[in-house]
Image 1 (cartoon, rainbow, N blue to C red):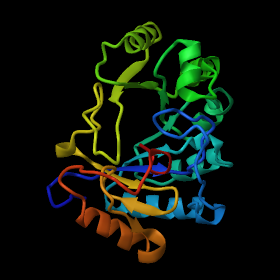
Image 2 (image 1 turned 180 degrees about the horizontal axis):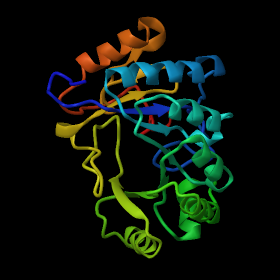
Image 3 (image 1 turned 90 degrees about the vertical axis):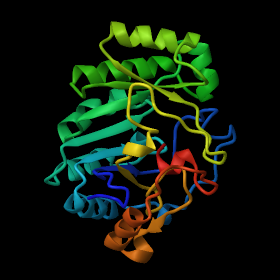
Image 4 (image 1 turned 180 degrees about the vertical axis):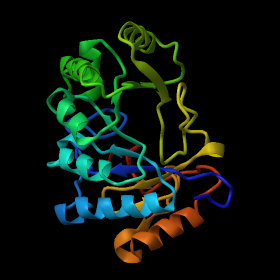
Length: 266
């Protein structure tokens, strides 16, 4: 499927929860967030319905995000359901890695193709400072396990302030080089202010080739992360919401004053 700017839309990002087991400084306040009521969280059946409709329209790439997707009960079952839909060539997940060692083998067996793991520093104290709750050893063990079960390529998402030459980023890059990992540098974003840039080592942030739609954890289809537009699958139906999102996908991002990273999926 193509939008009105002749961009081929073949990528669906799915936020399965607004819950997270970390409180990263650039994502959540230290006190946490007001969580969605459980009855508002999109069900697995609804997600599968959206994926099937999206694939019928031309989507062949799906990524599961959060919050932290591995905290949602039954996430391996969801991966299995999505992997079983004919037409999907690439099924990935973005995770903070805390629970990855526990789930990597089951995710691989269920049909997950690969993972992106967030890692901004290799300094244990600084990692704990950034995440407020995290133990970096759990993340490193999760990355190793993902490689062992061949959830490859394992990509590392490294948030930077201004440059990939920052000290922590350089250390993470060397770690990736030594361990055959791919690194993507993501400049810290601000939805409300419209601050975003191209991902170094990836294609994100380049509006001219944007190929994605997003499904939020409360059942809205968003055509753009940096925009307030969203269309409810519960109010409009799955096909209606997809059609509206495709029709109104903007040429480029602006600002998002309504959403947050933890329920849209970054």
